[in-house]
Amino acid sequence: MTPSPSPDAARDLFQVSETGGTDVRKLAEQMATVRGLPETVLRYTQVFYRRVGEGLTDPTRAAVILGPRVVGHIAIMHRLANGLDAARLPNGVGQRLWSDCIHRALAARFLAHRTKAVNVDLAFTAGLALEWGVGPLLINRGQHLRWLAQVRIESGARRVRVEKELYGDTHMTAFDDTAREWGLPPWLVGIVHLHKTPVEDNTPVETAALQRICQWADSLAEAMTSPAAGPALEEVVRAAGSMGVHPDDAWRIVEAVLRMTPAAAEVLDVDVSPQPTIDNLKSRTGDYKSLHDSEWAALVQQENDRLRAELSEARAALDRAAREDPLTRLPTMNTFIDLCESAVHRCHVDGTGATLILVDLDDFTEINGRHTMHTGDKLLVHVAKRLRGVTQADNILGRVAGNTFAILVPGDVRTGQVIGERARACVEALHLDTGSTRIEVTATVVGVSLDEITETTRAEDLVTTAYRHAKAAGTNVRNRVVWSR
Image (cartoon, rainbow, N blue to C red; front, side, top):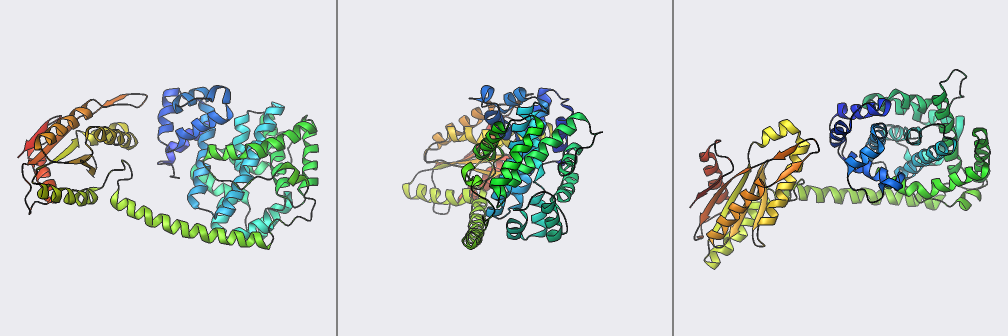
């Protein structure tokens, strides 16, 4: 996943989770500045607010339904998910860590729903952060498999002591460093520490309720990973009685956590390990060995497979980057010329002509400056889609510069001229609605036509000629087609 483009943009959204003080239009603009966040907001609504989210396809509408405060919480979750995903923990470790994080988030959410003590979205956000600090700890200190074997199976104060002995740090302090860097709200940092300490008499009511909920959610998740999960879960279920939750309801929460973990992982776009059944957990009474020899071997093999897959993926990405524009999925300049060389050669063999067309978006720098580069990127994608619609099967379309597209039309030059006019018209007809404004754009089209292709004609020469004529046309030409024969 790609990190947020601006720490300030993310901090503004985190602030919403504390104040809720923003209107929907501003909220939609803020969401759009964090790549992937609108999609996360939409998925969150569809999963956790099924009654109103079913069939919903518009992220802005989802934000209206949820309200600014909840969108602020989702921005925090989205940032946490992006942060660990970008670090590329080994798959076996990363999947288990995300299972642990989501178990706590769901347990906190379901307990908050049962007790009506705090807002469920607040509880989910806090629960997700409780274990998240393990990620930075492992990234900075390594020893991933030792965490699985020595730390993850412990609970409570013993868990924290083992972390300190192994890493010289704990997952709470590791969370602090990242939280300060990212500007996460103070209440979240506080609750990550408070969930391991007793509730004091002078603690504010809502904070105390959230602290108790997070303590129970953390205990539940630790019990689920324990070699003695059976008796540990029994103890956690009994502890829910102190918050007015009947044991039967507490067991239903455990079942719901296991059932909903894959769906919550899809919301956050992360991978989780396979979930055990509740009967499997109850059967663990202390002699369960969390990682026996075959599982260690499987994890090592999985890590080797991951590294090989990453190497293959990196090579493929480099190849694509050289051949294909990642934004519009059109050929780059070099690829476009290579493709055109073959087409020009065929024209020479067939004794036909060809037309090279440049489509240059007018005032694109000004559009970027006024509406952000993210909006400019969306505009380029829409223009590419429109140009695909006016070109023919044997035409070659590419993005040859920042705001410039090129089309080679083999054959009758009159056909090329028609394509050029259509290209100008389809751009002029394009309107991009950002929610707060409607952006209109035009293009200057420059075409070079040759009635006959000779043996010495090169595609690169056609492109160079078209650029020369575009420069000669000057900056005063807008929304016109300029032809050269």
